[in-house]
Image (cartoon, rainbow, N blue to C red; front, side, top):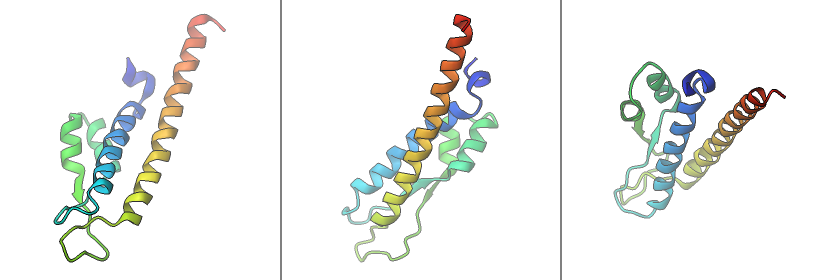
Length: 115
């Protein structure tokens, strides 16, 4: 029922939440020598999850190491400006997706009440 009610937004919300965790991990490890920043190709992961793959398979296939613009001497590839921008962009997308789902639930509740 949730797939027909929410369309791709349920999967999108889950992917955005997982991406937020990954970006947070990158930021938390900004000073860890040798840490390689990772990100999820959101469009590829969403396409894979809507094509019938499990969420784990979709994430695994869409996770990439981020290529640094200016690598550090200790091998860490986290660039704070890039990570913070990606985090903020993902947070806006998460909020928009959550708002859509909230509105859809509200509309359904009003329909069930006969309003």
